[in-house]
Length: 189
Image (cartoon, rainbow, N blue to C red; front, side, top):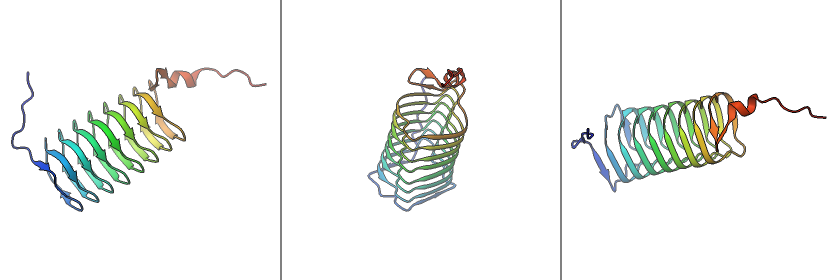
């Protein structure tokens, strides 16, 4: 059965929405293309099923946003703050999110490809069953996270700090981490 398109969905093309406030906004299935929304504020907003392409969101502040099933491509999220965000099943491709602060986020089954989260801080984040490929996670600080069943492939993990995380079934480039950590270490003499 084909998915029904929402022909009434909002469209934003070649727009400068920098500093805009999206408060209690419903933009289900919206399309954003070649948009700059630097330092925008998003509170209690719905972007479920939205498609964002070539969008600059540097320094954006997001609190309570539903972007479930959205597709984000070529997005700049550097130095942004996202809290209480629902990204379940979202697809993120070619994302620059260095120094991102992400907390209380729900992103199970999310697909991330060609993503840079260098220096990001992730706390209370559900990334269960997520697929992360071709990513720079160097210097990321992760606390109170669910990474169970996630798969990481071709990922830079240098300097990553993970505290209080569920890593059961986490696979990094074909190695199941929870099984690796459970193996007995040989005596060091």
